[in-house]
Length: 369
Image (cartoon, rainbow, N blue to C red; front, side, top):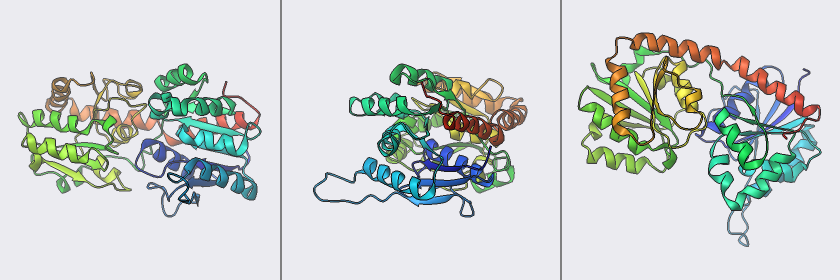
């Protein structure tokens, strides 16, 4: 394929959709494609030395409106910059409102690719305020992808499209075991348990603290919660209520999560909805087994060879799964299997090739239907 001029649209923050979009944009740019990343601020995970060109989406405010009109602003920037830059296609990540904004900018006569990431289908996508416009935008696109088979099935039921499934990628050269760093986060003899997210209610961070408190009754352990978001205050309150606040560390967002994940003994994910689980994948590549709730696309990622799955809300089972792994003589073997599995099944080169195949389909006039 000849070098393309690609417009990538993403949220810039801590969520998985923004991470996936940013890292895909960076890989494509390093392959020789010209990639322009549209976001309201420079994405958190975009390397300073990246060949990707960041294009800001300004949010002008006029008192006549109740707030900034992000959808219209994005549509205007896309329409203007696509002409100026000679874009070959636009790829949006997280459908709401990105798919509708791109459709507003280009209609059906331009190669649009949309990637669905989770709550843009399962929560916001089902809201009557967003469902109709989003469905029309997805239906008019040249291609739609989803990050898991579970999400693809849900999108087909909700929107009538048949997404191509492309799982997320992880770079094993960036995410790898760093046991020497464990001493920076845990005391001698303590197990280090880590969770990373944007602390939205759907991630159920307070439940992780509750399960950790049960684990602490049996073993010496420390919980490191990496990220920031609306549930941080509640998680702190629960830690104090259960008397484990001294053993729970809240660590602010970092563009280098690999330095913490690589030091962990286990990664914990207690989400009530999870289309895939990017942070869990990064943990696996770091040689860290995962204990997670069996929701959404998580069972497509976590197998018995690399972790444990438990039913949503069963904190006793969650704690027991953590303890089983920590006390298992097979833990070193699970670490090796986790890393090998992540590097083989979700290698960036493999995933990028799949997206390039989707781009070729879109450029050839394909359809998301």
